[in-house]
Length: 301
Image (cartoon, rainbow, N blue to C red; front, top):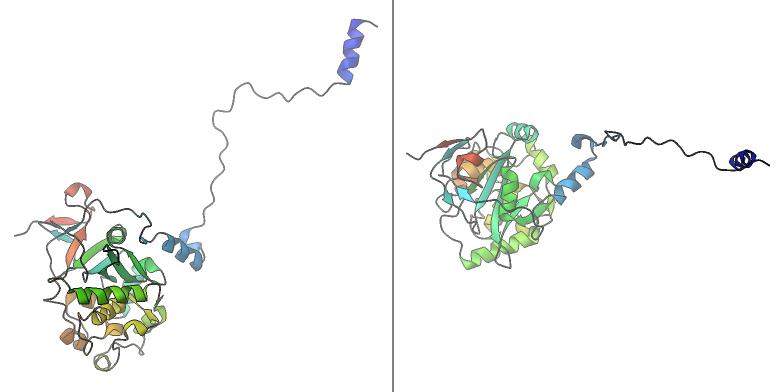
């Protein structure tokens, strides 16, 4: 048998020739598009779970603001920043308010006869001495939560404006202890979404006559609270507001902000001054380079 025949016979029993791969890789590898479900199309449980995961829980490591400053106080919720700014260190009893860009909540508050700000919360001393903040339904979640103060305020600054009604005089040790007790007892209570919705109906606790008789404090025995109700209840429990005249479930964030109200009973009885300073805009910065583009710094005259 000739050598040529041997080669042919070997070729018949051998494996097929390898696939002729190109000698050079493709210039652009194929891309598989990432499929994401728009946030508003996700189930509400998923949306709330994601929001809860982003809250500034104590020890969660959420980012601290680069600074903490209050501008000059005034009873206006405009966009002006009135200088000069001064450093701000949260203290027990400080009331924090904010307004975000949510059209939904702005419309809902307008229908209830109020406006910005739409969120309210109160600072208290944690058992370890650090400052915590208590809010009902932070960032549209469905629980009352104890959170880290400055990281939580920083998260609201990213969405809009933040103000502080700082205590004009410090709380006594007894008042601070009562405020801490209330905050820890109501942590993770339900957000009163149904009673909040009732504020748009004839069954609400807010009215020119009815507010004098209903909407009184419940203390820590209430099963649910909305944000401004929670702040008012905390102040009553700590002895900072008069339990006889305070109407937590008829109080809105704007009432806490302005010290006057369209509701005649609240306008007469709900006065945070002089125990609290007028609302002062809070920011994490003082120089113009970090200022939001819609803000205008107005020098103090």
